[in-house]
Image 1 (spheres, rainbow, N blue to C red):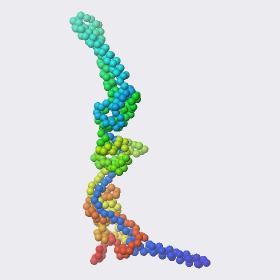
Image 2 (image 1 turned 90 degrees about the vertical axis):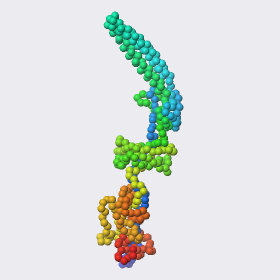
Image 3 (image 1 turned 135 degrees about the horizontal axis):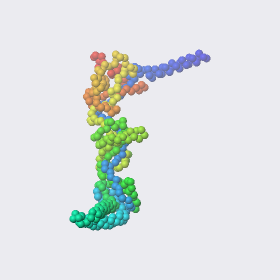
Image 4 (image 1 turned 45 degrees about the vertical axis):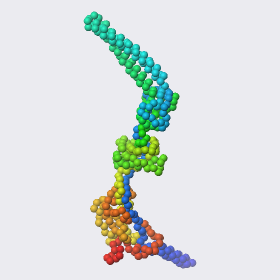
Length: 399
């Protein structure tokens, strides 16, 4: 019984080995991989930095008031188009007008006193020079004149201040633009204490916008004025907007141990799609090559292997001349049914594609990777797969 079990196990094991050899062992006679290729094309190769930012108007003015009081009337609302000097709000003027009247009366009295004391001083001065009055009388008239002059100048300043405060109650637009924010209502009391309360925010020209982008400290070194920028906003996911870097600000901002720098990007907004406050997903092109021959970067790392998938022996490897410098690389190019090494001069890359400066033409096919074809039936390969397309052919042999 025991012997019978051993025989059954042996037969089963032999059967499994036979199946494995049938499925995989036969592949060693032909190639165990296929070549993945790519075609040299002409296009753009660029290196970019990504960031997020906020859409803002180029010129934005906060309009406030320097006096306290009640908002009596509003003449502008959200999205109102205003011009420089246009009346946009008025404050209650009763208290300010009363203050002006009081200061005017004080000024008139101080002026009359000043004129009287001036005449009295000039008269006593002439008498004193003729020694017709005592020193005490002349000194008293001089003192009264100086005191009246000081009071007059003080009242003159207070009157000017009262007039200015009354003028502040009439609020006008400082620029031509659009009202993007209104912070008060009619009847609301505003107090101008240590800081000026904001009543309106006016943007100068919404056809010219800017993006304030936060660029990481690891990427800021490559960002410079004049670089091309593209960005998208969630409001228009299918639209790509163009811009230009106009300023790289030196002040760093640290948040959660992450250091960023603000980069100002100008953007045209002729159709007014870009609205203040939108979040922009920014791509800054720090290096670009336009309309150049390029291939996938993987082609530079491709190394040919033996047709059976095993590592070739040292004397089977195709001999290649070592590149003379870092800009010269070896790639494998298809010529007919053969693959031949070729030396090319490369330029910049973007971690996906690389620029070919010379040595390769548009439309040529290069090898970029190997893929296993084990288990893939092939009716035609029996002859072609027996020899490597990367190995040199014997003399007189058809290529």
